[in-house]
Length: 91
Image 1 (cartoon, rainbow, N blue to C red):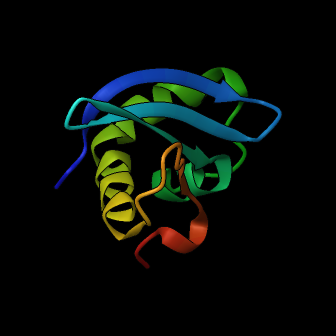
Image 2 (image 1 turned 180 degrees about the vertical axis):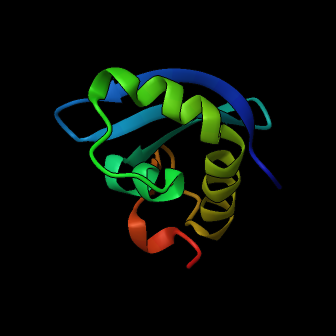
Image 3 (image 1 turned 60 degrees about the horizontal axis):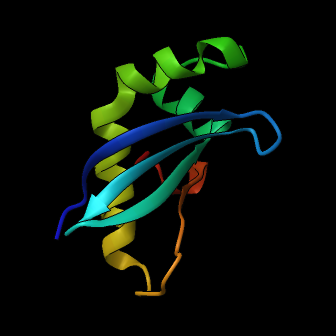
């Protein structure tokens, strides 16, 4: 079952990832995408932290589809965080 859109949390400078949530039948699913993966999707490198939210919004549909697909393949464990890295991107 596909996840549905929820909230944007924002850029996590410590983890070098952008955090957001999605919903699974009323349950919140925490998600994040690495800066490197987001830059790869955008076809650029070294995006500034202050520009990450705009970058996420422009790529949101693609990122959410990847997160939903990864969630469908993941074990059903309470508190599971969907993490998108470069290896998850279609080449």
